[in-house]
Amino acid sequence: MKTNRRNFLRTAVVAGAGAVTAGSGASCSRAGKSEELMPEVRQAVLAPHSQNFNMSGFGAPPLGKVRIGFIGLGMRGPGAVERMAHIEDVEIAALCDKYTDRVDKMQAMLTKFGMPPAKTFSGTEEAWKGLCDDPAIDLVYICTPWAFHTPMAVYAMEAGKHVAVEVPAAKTVDECWHLVETSERTKMHCMQLENCCYDFFELLTLNMARQGLLGELVHGEGAYIHDLRWDFTYDKNGYADMWRLKENRRNGNLYPTHGLGPVCQVMNVNRGDRMDYLSSLSTNDFAMASELGQLAKEDPFYVPFAEGNYRGNMNTTMIKTLKGRSIMIQHDVSSPRPYSRIHLISGTKGAARKWPSPARIALGHSWLPAEELAALETQYTPEIVRRVGAMAKEIGGHGGMDFIMDWRLIDCLRNGIPLDQDVYDAALWSVITPLSEWSVANRSSSIDIPDFTCGSWEANKPFDPNLPQGGNTQVIGIQGSSNQLEV
Image (cartoon, rainbow, N blue to C red):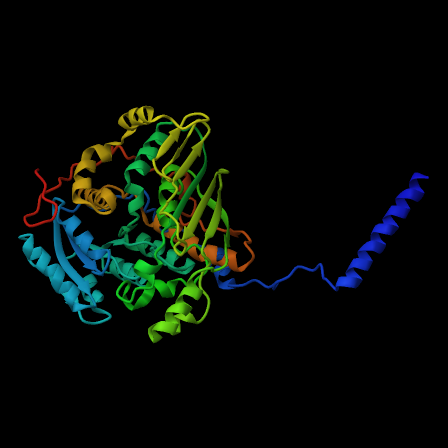
C-alpha cells in the first residue's frame, strides 16, 4: 500500500509539472550568457610572477632634504603643496599642470609664504616628463586623473624618483604588476596616498587591535558612500574634461581604497595574512543615466554623456583572506545618502565602528558609554597621533589626516625607514576595482586575488603606529599661510 501511494503521488506531481510547463511555455534553464566576460582580467590574474626584491621593510638611503615635484594642481594638488610647506626639510622644488594658470596660482602662494619659487612645467600634455627627469627632485607627488597615475608613477621611478600617488594607484591588473615590478627593480618607493589610514579613529582602532583589545580579528567593513553627482561629477567646472563622470562607465567598486586600506592595516594584510578571492555585485543604475538624460534635454553639452550605461548605484564586494577573515567593501557615489566609510572592525573580544557617528566601541554585547570610550581613547591613542595630531588638526586636510599622512611620508624618507604603505599595498588595494568589474560582469562569480608580495607576506612586518622608528620630523609655521603655528 505504501509503495502504490508513493508511486501515485510521484505520477501526480510529474503530471502536474508537465501541465504547468505546457500551459506557460516557461523554461527552467539559466538565463544569461554562459561565456566568460572580460577574460583578459582573469588571464592577467593567472600570469606568473616572481619577486625581484622585497620592498616591504626596505628603507631607502635617508634624505637630508626632500625635494618634491607636484604633478596635478587641480582639486588635490594645491592642498598638498601647502601641507608639505609646513614640514621640516621639505623643499617645494617643482610644480606641474597642463593648465598654466594653475601653476601660476601655486607659484604665487609660495611667494606669499616667503618661500623661493619652484621650477614650473606646464602648457602641454607631457610637461610632467620634464619634472620627472629633473635631477633636483627626490619625490614626485601625483594628483592627476586616475588614468595617468600608473604611467606617471612608473616613469618617475625609472627616472630615479620616489613616488607618492593619489588613489587609486592603478586601473588594471597589469598596471598593478607594472608598479610592483618597477619599484622592486629600481628600489624606489611607490606609496599610494591613502589618507584614511591616518584618520584619528582608524589609527585608534589599529592600535587597539595591535594591543589585543579586540581579540582575534574576524571581520571588517569599509566603504566609500559619498553622493558626488551634483557638486562634482555633473559639474562642468568640477573635474577637468569631465574625467570622473567618464570613469563611471565602469561597473564595479571604482574607489575601494578609502574603506579597504584601514581594514587591511588592522588585519595585517600583506604582513601576516593575504587576500584570497573576492565576489562582487552591483545594483542597476537607478540615477546617473536618467539624470544625465534630463540634463541633456536642457543643455546639449550633456548629450554625449546621456548615451550608454553607467555603473550601478551600489556595489558590494566581499573578500576572503587566506586565514579565513572576511572583508566587505561598498561603493556608492550616486545615491542621496549621508557620507560613510563604515570602518567596522570585529574581533573575538570586541568591535569598533566609526559610522554612523558617533564612533563606538564594544567589548561585549553593547556599545560602551561615552565616558568609557573616552578612557579607552586616552589609553590607546597611538604615538603618531600624540606626536602630530593636534598640529594636523590646525593645518587641516580632511580634518588633519592628510597632514599626518604627508608628515609620516617625509619622516620615513628623511630617516631612511620603511614606508607605512608600500607598493604592494598600492597594488593590492587598487586591484579590487578591475577584479570587482570582472565579478559583476560574470554574475558575481568569485575570482582569485593576486599575491603581489609573491609569498613574502608571511614574514613582512606590520606598521606600528607607535613609531618605534623615526617620528623626529618637526612641523613648522609658514609666514602668510592660512594655518599659522607656534613651534
